[in-house]
Length: 264
Image: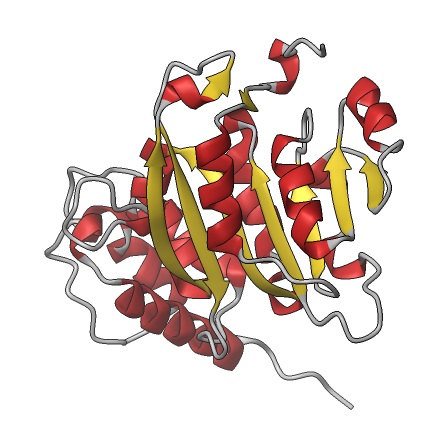
């Protein structure tokens, strides 16, 4: 039996009823391009294989990767998921876009989610087990205490649906927090904002949550030269995702118009 390694943040899912419920939510089909992040001992992996017959798994732990390679139908990528180019993963002809699943390591779940943003155009959907607190932050609506940078950045690019909660007892060893399963479906036509600019703007807005936005965005907007209507007499959590997107688009347009012309 493989023992969980703390340095990898390993907590293995062992509850069969939870595994069945996750697989039902994913509804994998033969011929689809499924990719699992962090398969661990393979509890979810083998359940997925029963339905899809072919699966790519990304596993950093060398010992676990070696065991998984002995399973028919598995294409094992032994690598740090943050170094994997999802847009370049090979897909069988006719398989369509990637369907990404996994019980994400809680200590690096947010970096993984931001890393996957770069490949969103190649992804059909994502189903992840995450710390419940993180799921609540991702799905939070404006005005809620959990609403923040993570909410805005991911709701810009995905339709978000929290499916169900998972108790700590469903894992070995049990984590100190509750978990939840999340479905993320890339939006067909997201606002065409520059991700780096949106992240800069939203990070600035939420840098001092208790202060009004005139303290965090006011000077930033003046320097960018934009005259877009935007009420800075609010706090960051009171502004909708759509308003942040409009502001980011206006700032980008202002910066572009201020750029010096290139002589030909």
